[in-house]
Length: 165
Image 1 (tube, rainbow, N blue to C red):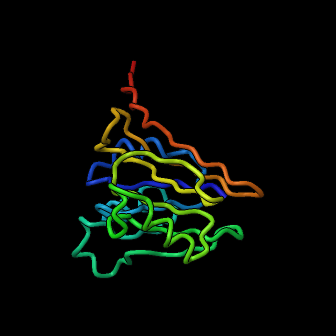
Image 2 (image 1 turned 90 degrees about the vertical axis):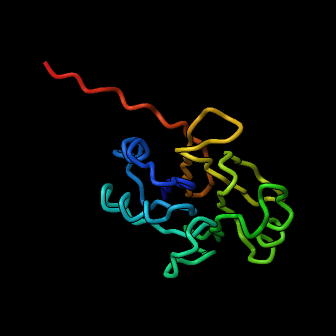
Image 3 (image 1 turned 90 degrees about the horizontal axis):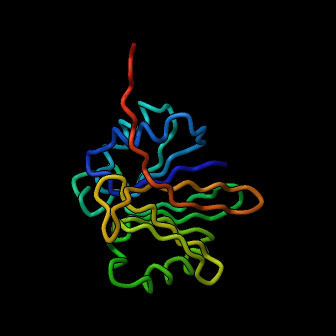
C-alpha cells in the first residue's frame, strides 16, 4: 500500500499536486492546517484522502482531531500534533501512541520533517510543502506498507516550464 502523507499545505498546493501526479498512490493522508486543500487534491488526483484538522482548521466542524486507521494490519494514529505540544516535546505523543497501541504515528504542525522509530513505533512528520521551518526544502512523505514499512521524506521538485515548438 502506497500512501502520500502531507501536512501544513496552507492553500498552496499546485506544486504538490504536480509532484503527486503519476505516483500510483492508494491513499493520501492530510494532517491538517488547511484541510480544505484536501478536497481540491482529491478532485485533481482522483485519490481518496483521509484528513484530520489542525490548529488552523478550527472552523472545520465536520473533521476530526484524531483518527486511528488499520492499514495492512498496522495501526496508524493520525493527528496534527498541536494538542500534543509536538513543537516542544514528543513525550505526550509517545504516550498517546502507547495508549492506542499504534505502529505508526503521523503528525504535522512543526513544518519540519521527522522520520524516526522510537520504541518500535514509527513517528513520521512529512514537513511542509509550502512553508518549511529549519530547512529550505519543501517536503511531503511517502510510506509503503507491505510486510515491512518504508517511510521517506520527499523534497518537492520544481516543475520545469513546458516548452512548445
